[in-house]
Length: 492
Image (cartoon, rainbow, N blue to C red; front, side, top):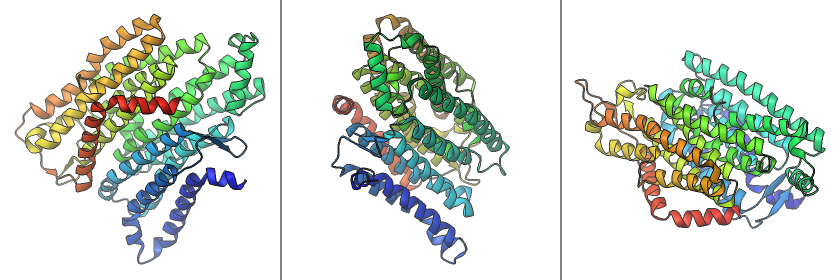
């Protein structure tokens, strides 16, 4: 490793080294008399680490570079995506601090927080990775940490144990599929570096080499697509998500639903050159988007539990991400990442609100629809903010959620006029997906029952985050043109 490589990888190396220091100090202090002081403040140490890493990335002077023999590449796009990932991770870790206190993690506190930081470090590396072999190892690092986060309360909840086992078994199967597909790509091309692979395929197309019909390459790319459909929880490979997310602790679902999607979408965009010229693979993405709309819209209609409802909502929104990939143009990707920003902020606001709504006596979260009855009369301000976030998630005009979905549909039709039927299909299913959001608003605002809720007041930090997200979404709505132009410049 040269000195230039160290300079380029400084933010990631800084983050990983301090992560290892946190783990070592936490294990060493476990039996010491001042261990409680370290454990109780660990969330703030982690937040400080995330903040310093953001500053290092903001001060990065190398805008276009590669490190470690082109295994990792860096540009303004990658740096901006890392900064966004770290800022959202910082907000999520701060907002779930109260959950860890309510769960009384005690001796598991250090391990769970380190696992969260390991996932963040994996996402930082995933955004910049430029080699199939290292891509696989980084995804496995993320997956192994995610399995533990889903099942660490297995002794207290059979649903957590069930979700962790399902996630582990299915995740292992799709990891094998991904490894097998990468091996086939190497067998056919002799390459694992993404830059070299892109050059190879472009030259093959120029010389009229029909790699669309090649016996091995197209099936391999199809298997890669299927593996990433599983990671994104896109239909029809989202069958694991409702059970896994319902069984997972709320803080784990919150973390895994928000943070990894940013980096995974980034690497999927980087790999899009594999299928952008193949009609068969584009049609498969179209089918997956349509199925995501169907399963996400219809599946959520019959749910009474909040976490399952949000899971089906995420599956439905994955259809819009796939539409951005189908467009494949600069504007299509710009609108997709604009939607990603809005989607991430909406999830941040919704999960922080849900996490802060706890019964006064048991400190348990409100897990089903009917727990929200009388909420408007108990806490009007939080109910109004929740209603605003739900309306925006449903895509009700003129809120920013509608604007983001409209841009995605517009870019898809502009790129493929033949996909008008898919636009009509998405518009027909949109009222169905909006129904379960409106049902939740109806229950908390208009339904009444004699037993009143006694809720613990939200913490000052949760109140600040919810208010900040709401104001930020309003600002993004007013200045959406500036955000789109900035995103366009990064992608170009």
